[in-house]
Image (cartoon, rainbow, N blue to C red; front, side, top):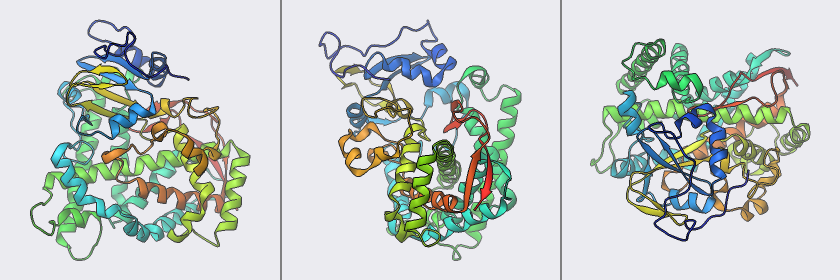
Length: 458
């Protein structure tokens, strides 16, 4: 895929709206998107680097050039995060509205400032042992020769790491409640085919889908509230993210409300483990089908490590880091970022009216052959420092960028650089399912079918 040239409008008129495909009355381009969500953006990119598209009640532009993506991500005063208010009004769905994902402006800045210290590099080093222990437990549970569904296994692993690291609790029987909620939210974000038709019905319509969603999310809300109450009953026993959220800042000017705490827990418990599980799933899918890269990884693990990785070992795991980054290039967990123009502005030489939704499709930009030669090939060497420096900054942005860059970025990379080496040392995965499954654009990018592998222990 190669996008068109960047620049001003076709006639040099800076008041020109971006080009884009024709749509249907009322529906706009929704029918084209629903039929083939990811392919839709490949088609849009043929119109240029800033492309107009329309959906019911929504005017949008998709952005494909790294320079313009940087313009959007680095200017939060002009491009705020889109919190999907229009869709919430239609569908009557609202998920964690006071969490870090959907708050805006001053409320978001207070929250980010309050939570950021928990994700500092010095604090993250203390999570190393929890990451190792959780991965060791998972490997110990596998029998030699056992067939496993790795997307499910990695979801279970990353949830365990998250809860034991950031929240210092063992979910026990509550694990399934959180897993069910994650599955429901993934499905709710799937706007392809027949799934979209049912999801466009408001939540109060008693479809099987809506009844299941309500039941699962009610159970999840009760679980989150119980965790908060249990922590409040033992405030001095823990030093973790939940404890931090329950405290006031030193100047006593800001304290999180119960609603904020509840919504942050939802955000971290769901998004915080599903994104990393997705990255692990595609990392091992790619390694299972690229033997030379797998052997290169195994060589690094055996030469750089005497045992399980520690925080001090991570700078030496250059091959591991490049493998993880390349997997997230080919299969970016978030898939797409969303912004909204808070005022009329210009982007790439085109006029962007106030209220326009701005779509930043990572999966399309990451596959652009202007920035990545043979983008459909798994080539971790793309991420050597020298090659990375030659690319535009936002040709690769799996964690976003600017002030709203993912708060858990360092935690996720640290997790990948612990889990991948342990697995490379202790098991070999034999792929049993498709080497190139279709991908669904849900809450995170997901393989359209389970990824099945046979475990061969070393």
